[in-house]
Image: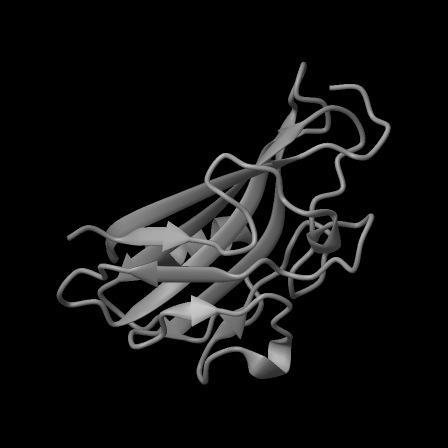
Amino acid sequence: MSLTLTSTTFAPDGEIPTRCTCEGKDIAPALAWSGAPAGTRSFALIVDDPDAPDPAAPRMVYVHWVLYNMPADAIALPEGITPGQLPVGTREGLNDWKRTGYGGPCPPIGRHRYYHKLYALDAVLPDLGTPTKAGLEAAMEGHVLEQAVLMGTYIKKGSAS
């Protein structure tokens, strides 16, 4: 059994609902996982958009959420989770709005892809403070047992696809 990441908020490769975006309540989607490999000590989650700012001419990967040290027995994050509701021990990193927490899709033009990447790690990472995606990836190096990816898309209402 391999690590699998799913959501009851959106289907794989499907549209992320407006409530989870800057045009709605900007709440995190529900995420659930199963099939963690033996030896998993913690999980990390990175949500990013490789299509920024324009899918026709992407220039950067925009980071929407960074979590690490989710406990090995965690299996889900409910829709709309707040920092105070995260599993005990979970730490937050900085997104590209230079804040912690979830920041939903808010594409300036076109339909963007949002990758929710869950990593099963063989270690509980040291306190990294509030790392960027790059800082977390560097800390995870050599500790990733398995990765699962769930992709959703979003286009602002009235925007050209």
